[in-house]
Image 1 (tube, helix red, strand yellow):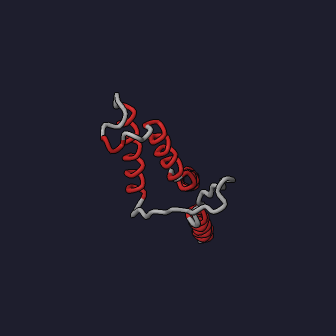
Image 2 (cartoon, rainbow, N blue to C red):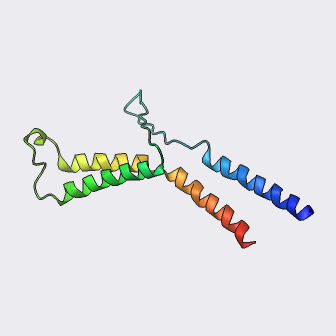
Image 3 (tube, rainbow, N blue to C red):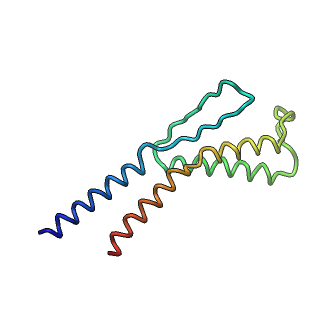
Length: 118
């Protein structure tokens, strides 16, 4: 019976650690000296699959733009810089990558695999 109690305590501690790793998620805050007032813009996703899909679409858009031989074909976009536009989208992709979240998943996996190996 004592081994079961010890296992339950260990499982409970691991669960508490997993909850700490998932919540709260750290958000990136960028401070820019040339702008005294900065705003944080957020958007909602239903799950990690949707976030992955959005990031994938943004990256594909950049790939398609880089593959095109001429600048943007639409006359309405003739004043847009292709390189600057692609760099802006890539900067956006970098800022919405869930770095902290992915690191917490690695920690959770390591925590759970350690138990199964014991």
